[in-house]
Amino acid sequence: MDILTAMEISGSALKAERTRLNIGAMNLANANTTRTIEGGPYRAKSVVFEAKPLEHDFRGQLERADTRLRKVEVVAVVEDKAPFKEIYDLSHPDADEKGIVRLPNVNVTEQMVDIMSARRAYEANVTALDAVKSMALKALDISR
Image (cartoon, rainbow, N blue to C red):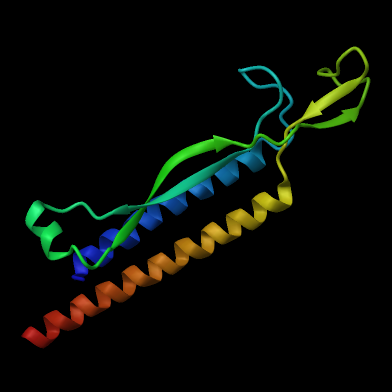
């Protein structure tokens, strides 16, 4: 594995974790949204990651056939199919004729844990990139 490959792997993880952070923030921001453009309450979303092979030229593929190095990519942002929360509130503007208000299916605690996990993964990949950079600089110093 060379330095650029390590940077590509960590870079893909940074991009994926940034998407995960953004989706978590969006879910928290809409935790009380009872009316969306599509109609009805906001539906929580989550990110689906997939390990993808590193893309190189044909010769590079043959040379790396046995290493099985993978990067991560976001392949989908999916809606949570969990049912909406329902409360009784006759004074709410989105209450139905029985006084039931449908609230988003966002679990605030779950979203906070997911955001903290994404943040830790992001920080770990920044540390990995710093280590690669440090090794590259040391290699340049040695060659002088």
